[in-house]
Image (cartoon, rainbow, N blue to C red; front, side, top):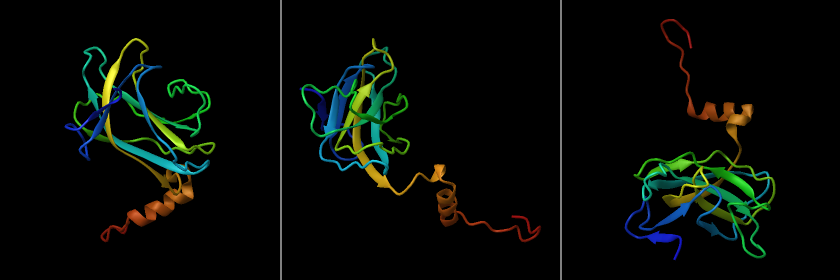
Length: 169
């Protein structure tokens, strides 16, 4: 059966998911009944690793897609027209577990299903990867795009003390 569940290779909990993919085809998993709201901000993080099962693939990428809960007929998260891309990982070449985070996602409409797929940049190359410890959390705002929010966050984390000898800051 696919995708595969690995009980012996994991990042956090003693279970990880192994999947394969090409640019437009492959395996995917999903979580239902997630209240993803339009114009809210979400941070997606996860642990992942590349599996060099096919020598010429070189890397793996993971893609995250918001979709409706009710899908009529066969659903293809690789080529969905009624979905929204929540983000794609950079190329992952490390064969050891590492933690990754996507840029903050602000959906343009409400969704209730999150798909996670494996892919490669090439339609001809099949790649493999494992993923674990997937987390999607709502965050208050995108601080780096909002100057007031950035200044507010910085004031809570950075203390500036002037140089006592030269009185320069």
